[in-house]
Image 1 (cartoon, helix red, strand yellow):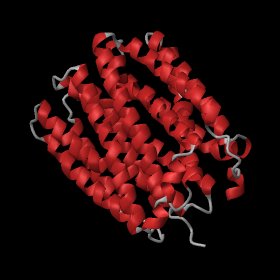
Image 2 (cartoon, rainbow, N blue to C red; image 1 turned 90 degrees about the vertical axis):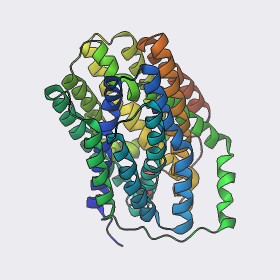
Image 3 (spheres, rainbow, N blue to C red; image 1 turned 60 degrees about the horizontal axis):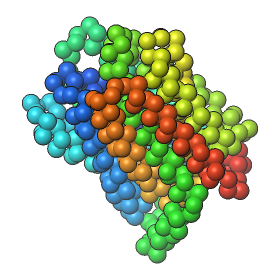
Length: 389
């Protein structure tokens, strides 16, 4: 039995989420400082999410049909970095739209295929996933704290050059991750994917993912601007972002044990319930730092708990043969369509009604997701994770 490449897998997650730790918290602030309004920022974020609807499925089809997931990942890492370099040039809004679409088409292929490759590499040790994935959280923290401190001391520091360097690091590390060994899926077998999707429980699961990402979108797009409006410094904002990810890491560290006692269904339902509380705290108590701290600690559930549950549920619903396409579908429906809807409505309502109304809508999305998940998701009689290795 070949030992999984823990070092290169963990290293890639570190670099990938360090990129996100620079991009997500500070891109909206960067665009706002460049003269774009809240609606335009929401539209650009929605466009980036829109590319997740198409590109992950193309990447999943290529990876599963050729059996070369890492080749697809390396190709997309290279061109994502190349296209992002265009942000270094002077651009008006129309130019940013074109670059955002091009960058997103390559960037949004990468993570679902890497998740599938990771699960393949650790197929004999499924509970090690959380221990590998937590290095992504470490990378996010390092970036969000480092960049936040840099911006406080040098407000003119450019976000695009930092992101570009990190994108280049993604490509370099991907070169060291071994290709997974899998057989090409023939067309006849590929047809069984549709039979998996049309199950009521799977459709309900995908709808829950969509609603949860629609709820998170305002946080990803406007949280830093929201705190700026309430008088918090960039360094403190970075610290609050990092606190949420620290909480996420702590959950990842104990998730292997939790999976021995709790079902994926219970983890998902509990995480969604805490999501309702989190968004209401942001809506009504943003001026209270202690409430912001509690809200960020809940990131362990609203992102970490949901992420682990959904990743393993995709593995359950789609099996080994369709992992690439299954992970791509999760990204397309959840992060893609859900992120698009959430980014768009948050931009519209933020401009017209303000942040509190938007976060109340986020709580409402979680409430609907909780109802759907309670009725349909996770009720199948399937093997417990501890029996899988």
